[in-house]
Amino acid sequence: MKAQSRIFAFHLLNDRSGSPKVLGQIIRSWIHEGKEVHLYTMVHQDGFLSNLEGVNYHHGWYKFKANPWLRLIYYSLSQLILFFKMIGEVKKSDTLYINTVLPFGAALIGKLKGCRVIYHIHESTVTPAILKWFLFKVVSWTASDIINVSRYVAQSHGITNIPNHLIYNAIDESFLSNVLPKEKNEKPSHVLMVCSLKAYKGLYEFIQLAEDHQDFFFKMVLNAGQGEIDSFFSGQHFPQNLEIYPSQKNLHPFFQWADVIVNLSRPDGWIETFGLTIIEGMAYGLPAIVPPVGGILEVIQDEVTGYSVDPRDRKGLNKKFLELIGNPVNFQNFSQAALKRLEVFKEKTMQEQINRIV
Image (cartoon, rainbow, N blue to C red; front, side, top):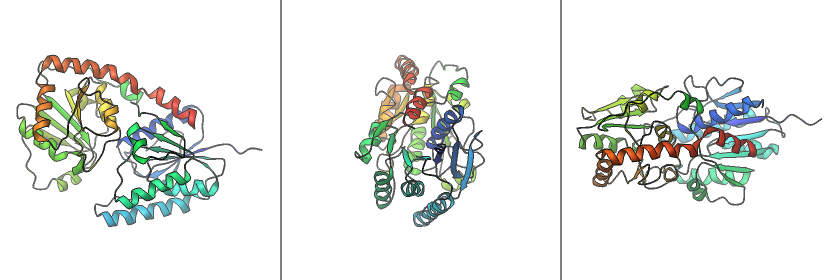
């Protein structure tokens, strides 16, 4: 008698960032279809992968450390724990779904057991370089299929000996059903950025932008606790027109408040491979300002739904910012185009494409 096929999904850091959010959307569709789903991830009360109904949980261990060497040790230990904890749980008939390139311990189990291994690759930037080389070597050695969130990601890793699939991330249908009525400001003046607490995400560039435009209002929502934020910005001066918030369960009030959404990731430190918060902003008709490289350029349409500009170019950033938010007619056209562009990133399309592969 043939063993029942199960899906084992693996994700390292269960927080409120984009990649676990997308995996949560996918898992809910599997549960809806009656599949038996197992999820290995770290314990987190408020992560996007927490408390998913119908999921069989296998809790792992990982602690993020600021020190890069200590972080590498903890990460390696987390994969050793994963390997020995799950090798007895996984059967040859199971499908292993690895979210991001980080859970390489799961890929090694899949190779050893002869399982089908599907990688969902969200990133192109992994440091240090030797770790990136190793992780993508594991992908090329173990994967049966690769799902890329953008053409940029596929081009970056360049693995061509395995079937590659382009599937854009999608906006959660539950997010769309909770969109709040938006009151358009007669003069657009509210600017929002949602990102991780990392300097390369453009935190200081956003502060500079607020300093340069005292007549506008800025909010920054960071994927971190208030204590971490206070420690990170210790001694930093903030302009009075800028408010900073810790991680939020509900971002709708922020999108409702905003007129423009920005992503100011520095190309010398981080290349955006997609840009989920930009799509969420589209649901509110928010034009965007984004970096000039990466998969995020497949999300917005430059000079149609937003502008691309290098955030390190302070003068150029200010120029594009004023072109967008300082021209009401131009702004309104961009806003309407953003709402239309949202149709490309519907959840049902993403789920159907992934389920055909799985």
